[in-house]
Amino acid sequence: MSPAGILAVDAQGVILLANQEIERLFGWTREELLGQPIEALLPSRYRHGHAGLIKSFFDTPHQRPLGAGRDLRGMRKDGTEFPVEIGLRPVKTSRGVVTLASVLDVTTRLEREKASRQSQKLEALGTLAGGIAHDFNNILMAIVGHSELARMSQGDTASHDLEQVMSAAERGRQLVQRILAFSRTREVKRAPVDLSRVVREAADLLRSSLPSTIEMKLSLSATTPKVLSDEIELHQVVMNLCTNA
Image (cartoon, rainbow, N blue to C red; front, side):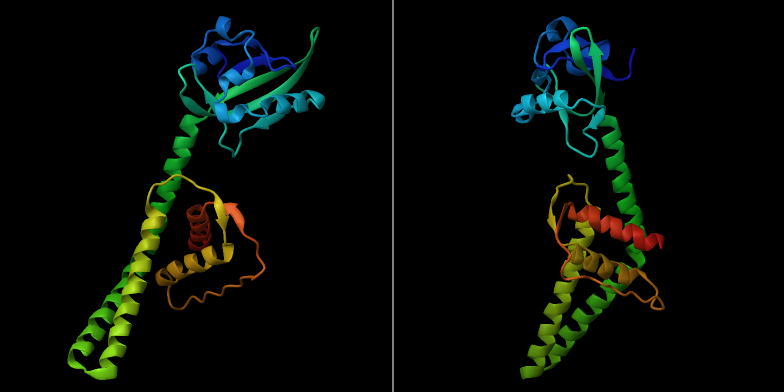
């Protein structure tokens, strides 16, 4: 049995052939699938405009992959969805050009990649732990020290010390938030991200874990455009590059 589901589809998007793996993946029998539009195997949100994509492929047929790096999904007969990658290959037949589509269920692979990313985050946190603990200890010492001074002082001096307490507490809060955001398991969400800010924040965390003999220099351009990405994933890229270096 082929490890991939195989479909043959004509220029109108009608299913002409389906192998046994397609039956297993989608829960339909071959008899049920033959003659159905290919959209029957897609979630409703992907169906709009799909006919145009089929026409575009048949106008300029050539082998191509679909779904790599994208959230492409198939839909089973019972309505449940699963992530897929698809390869398209045009084949000339007596009935004209037919498209052979190979369909792979990538659920297991994506789960492994997710587990690997989480493992890398925990490894990076282990590297940072010593420096972060030292930095956080300094923050706590500042809070305790200025609180003691404020308790013994009066007037403007007490006000200044209390401001220092609040400042140190805020630094501690931000540090904890960054650690929690970096370490927690979460769905990847792409949004416009300011690269300079991400690099600067990652550098702040890294600074705590590096020996004082190592100098860090940031060269950030004010004209760098935003990118559509996941902010925490970018943090991890920067952290991994620096810790490996």
